[in-house]
Length: 328
Image (cartoon, rainbow, N blue to C red; front, side):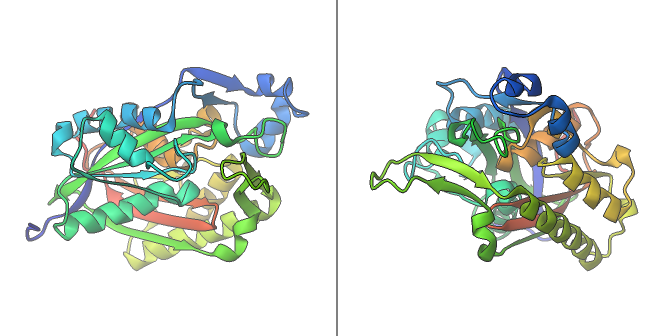
């Protein structure tokens, strides 16, 4: 049951990244590109690639176990698992969330996936906040997990240079002191064809998938949309950018991150950037970047953080919250 003055809080954060590194120099041997061009256009130096026998659910499970431990919980204290992914283990079912629940040994639990592309983790925050504050659930495990390499055309130089694999997870529970202040999500499906995972036109139901993007158009819309969204969220909650301890954006492209950072007039030390190490890990990128800040002791209990993301759909969102996890 909900209790007076208690709000949903992000009580832990964790991530998992595969061992294999795919560098820009290696990509030069695969497609017509260069390390200099990739760095200048995206800020990416390398990305992680999951092993052939490593599924999205495996990545998510490893991040989840760390998040549960850091929240001082046991797996059987989790009563919902929500997963955001654009690269699920299976085409339609079972959900990646169900696979992760099985991996954790949980049999009677709410578990489902959402499809909101790179905005997925912020969508999960909004869902988990509602579930916990309504009293419907007590401890909600939220996971952004991607094996983007499984849907990547490594002959398409416009997109294969961008994406990597990984997972991030957190626990949302009630807390009196460190609330998720506000979450905003939105979408505009009229731009859907600019960034999509396209199925083959084959009549076979399990025909191949490949991600496609019209990069220049996406870049322009993303910068404008995200800049407006974060400003509106701050103004709505009467919070100045100077009050933000950390800005943790979706790690898609360094130029997009810097454009929003400049709009908010935030110092570099307040901006968390990990795109150079992991590339774009879609729904996993925000919790992975957040985990890096946590393990570097930049993200601390009570820190006021601002999140933002933009992804295929188009979807986008932003969130304001005090981190509720114990110090590392």
